[in-house]
Amino acid sequence: MPPYDPRPVVFVTLRGRASVLGKLSLRDEVVVTSWHAPVSQSPPLYLVALSSKLAHALALVRESGVFVVNFVPESFRDAAVAASHHSGEFVDTFGHAGLAVVQASKVDAPRLTDALSWVECEVVQEFVTGDHVCFVGSVIHSEVVDEKSPRLLTDTFREVRRS
Image (cartoon, rainbow, N blue to C red):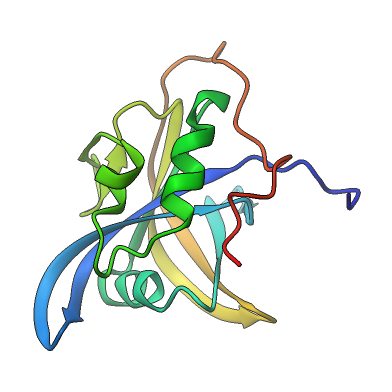
């Protein structure tokens, strides 16, 4: 195991217009990742790195210019595995993983109803690093439900990663 493991697993929630079978429609998507970090306090910026294999999710971030980072407890392990094995292009990944969502407060994207905390971001920069695409977002809004929340889900298990 690398020295930077375990890392907290987050659910990145997205909404955007995408072409599915030649028809443009509004789509919601959830992506599971442990590649994320705050990268600036002033201004507040947050980075998520998404696999370059996630073409549908990447298209949604690029089209909408927003994303929400949802921090979840260990009890979301099965949902992380379920969500990480399907693309929202043809499957309702939220429904498949049993995730409930509500509208985010300040950006046009869903957020997880049962998240312990979340960060709503507008994309200010995109760049490629190896096999991932990094999106740096300006933090528009963030909330913490409970300062004494349960342990966060971490990637000490490998099933959450797409092959």
